[in-house]
Length: 340
Image (cartoon, rainbow, N blue to C red; front, top):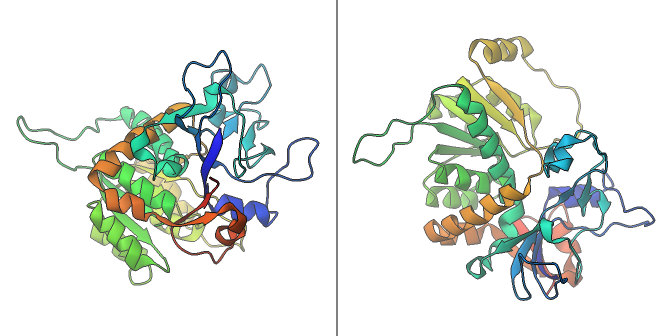
């Protein structure tokens, strides 16, 4: 594959700050980049899924080698039991921020040419796609379908709150809107005016944390069926958990940095989880079918909200300026390194 673009996220910034990240065995450096977008230039004799000229996105996590890890042996390394998985650009495998890469066919996902300018957003969208898959599986435990009147389109009967208006949060809001949710985005952001316009364009609501407390958020939304956390701030997350509605699901996707201790009303939260049949779910990485779902939904999104999805990409930097988007003060929503 000839690499075209690589998205930059907080994980990359944490790796270059040496908070985590592990080079491959035998190397004293790690090539960054796990949000890939590339063009196939050459294939092996056994390859049948792609051909030269095809656009592709590659998955991130690779299975562990333990024969008794059922998840990895079934291609679900996102649920690896041993923790000995590897990840491109993160853990023991080089990433994609380079001119050319070689990859196994099973880790490739073809992207239609019409998604050329937004294909690099596939990997961050997979976070929401896996979360939604898990949400639907969990909610099979109860009657949860929205009522549909004959001859009328289905109404929004489920309310979702998205915490965070970064790329993961905004893409999650788009995926939830496609799935039929009434969506409210709650965020503290330096660029909340820009994020607010994106949220409004997709038919969701934006509530600024700078001007509205969590209590005011809950009062404005009403019964909260789903919280999709995409901010990595444990304080606000545990404040919002206390407003989760009956049978609600709270989905954690962020990984907060280690800070000082904080007070949490654990009795209140535990009581509600039991008495209101609530579920608290953690979701990390994504399997190949979540990449396929993300590519499918990007096609829907670019048809419904073309300006909104394109505006998620704040700036594109040539590879010789890659340190600029990796800086903590880079700003914007999603910055991208252009390889070729």
